[in-house]
Amino acid sequence: MKLDPATIERLKQKIAVYREFLKNWLEPSNLAQLRPKLEFQTGVLAGFALIASVLLGVTNCSTEGTIQRRLDEDLKKSLEEVVPAALYDNDMLQDTLTIPSAEYNIGANETTVYIAKKSGNVSAVCFKFTAPDGYSGAINMIMGIDRDGNILGVRVLSHKETPGLGDKIEVAKSDWILKFVGRSLDNLAPAKWAVKKDGGEFDQFAGATITPRKSVQAIYRGLQLFKAHQEQLINP
Image (tube, rainbow, N blue to C red; front, side, top):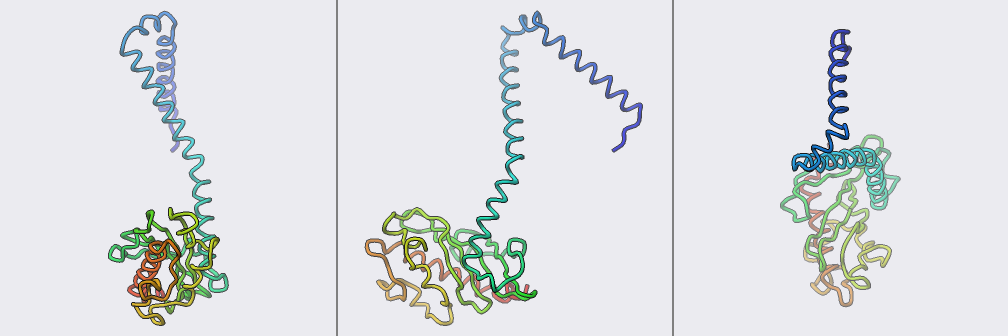
């Protein structure tokens, strides 16, 4: 907005008044009179608090972009692990849909689905989900599914399971999580979506049955979520 000369002059006059007030207020003799007063001490504390808040705000603004870039880089890396690069030529981070997921017990009322496209056609989808009832807490995962409902890959993003036992759900610790590739609701009966101890298809870990059991259950629920929204997701 362009200011007219009269407005500029009024602003200059106001600034001059404020500067004179501040100069007089900061005079040693005036400060000596104000210092014993409670209002002065309270004002000084409030001033420091204001300065601290401003500095925190400036720091947050200056680092927010960097933090978001790092988060996007981590997410992109995770997407690449569960959706083969040959299946898409778009930016999945920018191509998303949000679907309701409260009834599936996967840790969120709504789930962001990342859409993989090849030559404009949907080839696969990917989304994060949670097994909320792991042995030591939530197990956060990400899963890629092709347009026909077959699992392309699953990875564990974070967990608090027992080291040396439950942490075998990590691909760095064992190949257990790789056994889901190619599985779907169509080629595996509902009763088989369980660990072998429960009559299912998937191995449990010695001394740690709860972790794989809850992981399998969450992956199954994730497939059910995809199935319920399949038409919307593959024909956005």
